[in-house]
Amino acid sequence: MVSNSLRAYAKPVEIHLLVAGVAVWALAAVIFFRHPIFSSFGQIFGDLGDGSMIVYFHEHVFNVLRGRAELTSPPFFYPQGGVFGLGPAFLLNAPLYAALRLLGCDPFLSFQLVIMILTFASFMASLVICVRYLNIRISIALCAAVLMTFANNLFVKAGVGHPNFLLLYYVPCIVLIALWGIEDFPRVTRWSVLRVAIAAALYALLFSTDVYTGWMFGFTLLIAACTVGVLYGRSLLAALRLHSRPATILIGTAMVAFLIAFIPFIVIYVPVRAIALLRSYREYLGFAPFPADIINVSVGNLVWGWMVQILRGVRGAEQILAVTPGMTALFLFLAYRLRKNPSNIPQWQLAFVAASVAVWLVSWLLTLRIGTVSGFWLVRNLVPGATGIRAGMRVQLMANLWIVLGLAILLEHWLRTAPIARLGSRKLLVAGALLFCLIEQINLMNNAKLPRSKVLEMLSMVPRPPAECRAFLVSLSDGVRNYEQQVDAMWISNQIGLPTLNGLSSWTPPGWELDHTTNYLGAAKQWIAYSGLREKVCIYESSERRWSLFQ
Image (cartoon, rainbow, N blue to C red; front, side):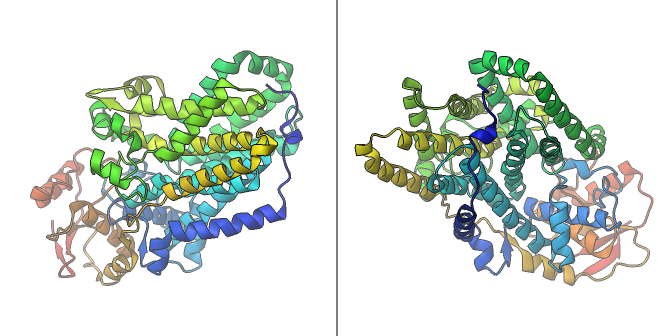
């Protein structure tokens, strides 16, 4: 499969491409971020639960960089230490978030701007990959970049309180750097070694940014690699034998860089294994998609929402992440046609299309459930890290990238192989198909449900606690969800500089049961006894803005 260097097929990236990319990104970004933008950023992506917690985690890392906090032990779930690894760590976001905070942006605005800036980086990286390395014409490449960056399931995921999954935007950037590093292969230079090392290090740091995103990318890469290995294993082995020395240098460089950059993950996440149980198979089944969820793009989807409402209704936030069915069907149809007549297409493009089909198909077969049976049982027992995965349908966020790139390759091939007499009609069909795929991504739900101004106002009215207080918890207010008040306590802790017994994360420490609303104060006393806390604890009544001693 390898005969010439990647550079021999690569197209130059010209200024008009970048200008067009900026213009298209700006238009698509306004649509995608319309709720934060048109609320003057009074409302941002996320909600008052997990969404607010995610912003808090960013602020904790910022405090660490300023020397005001310990990385692995943020001041919640007090006095339990080493709890940062109970959730995402967002290390790759830290430089940009810190820069925005130092420029005067508040935590919530900083987080929203980080996501918006990442969409630009991801969009431009996707565009360059399509044009330079996949040899796709600019018009199709621009549409592909929109479909990858502003997908329906990413919009939905932000709206159900999990905007951390938008950190998938790092993936195209990492892939672009990796391709840049190997484009002269089998020739190896200092620059190619450096680029490969940077790509590998960024991928390792992706695990310390959002574990799910790093794992899902690796899982889809594994499916793709196995597919290509089965179909073209002999050709690949022959190419590796022919170029064993440069391959060894680059692979060795990538491994060393990955292992070094993986150290923060070990520091953050290994300690929590002693206090957090892994996900059980039963818990996984509770969030697993059913076969009918293959079209579940949420009831808010402009094109398919009515069908989802009829067939599925609203079943859960983790089962509404399917890749849009029209785009998927078009991709599979064109891939099937290519299989019947695979002539006049480069072998590497054929391999990529096959890998993309496999990623979509296998990821579905291994994550869905029928009754109490799911193929993810095999994944849990064979793939490292899978026992930490609770919601398998999230992998469709990553599958979308493969489907879009595969579709772009197929559409480009269909146009290039068109007879002269049919080229015009095919261009119209391609334009219509891409327009439909773009419209499919529009979702009418409000995914900006985190009221930035409300939270900042609440924090500004918190009085100083009594001098004897060394830790605190909040008193629960009627009509407000328990988990929202847990996050409020974390922000109050950040505001006043005292640790809190409250907390919210993906897991909770053993013995901590303050999420039980019916016996909340009893659970707090039980946690104090269980943890051996001897310091003075205060309680804050947010409705009265009043502090008092608790114990």
